Length: 304
Image (cartoon, rainbow, N blue to C red):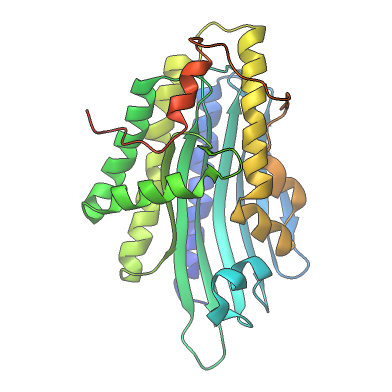
């Protein structure tokens, strides 16, 4: 039997998807999300919403999925070998937005709930999620706003929550083969069941509900900044790093593919264009070079 609160979490996530799509379409000012619903033969399905060629967003998506089955996928059971052989439910919302203007960062987030069942035993459940920011140009005030909003969302749950999940984000979104972070981080948490269910669920909602206040002011501040071909080429080069992380290191991508999820929805996170150039490096002292120090774990709020 699945966890008795599954439907409550699912209702929140469906509402969150609606809220994000409505607000992001207004923020875009020119594009709309189109929706496709899909079914998974092994159990479950979802609804995928994508925006393309908007006024702000070159490509973006906000996807809901609820998949279930009789056996955990290998990526999940490898992380939790004691749960091998259990049936499962996984429900979540994930979103990725790739703005056209290189001065507006790419942004990613997700919130999810997982249940592993076994006859005769209590369900094992946990929450996961977070959000992270991937800028192409270095604006310290934007990064501080992002992390300040994340810290404030965590504050009601204890003083150690933001530092812990901020550090986890830095560690998770790290390209080991490049020795750099994917961006400037944010929050990441997984296997969260150390608090009572209601507290864990409240924390998931706090994270999900704080995304728009974290991202929207940054997008509004940078969306009219002038750019040219040089900035677009650098954006495309840095987007290559985004692709590398998602295809090489991201556990969510692997879980989605192994669980028989909808491939188009799973790979929605990919940018519309990316490039790889052999041993390219920005000119010393250039605006592009200013990004590199941002791609290391850093206490962004130390001076604010």
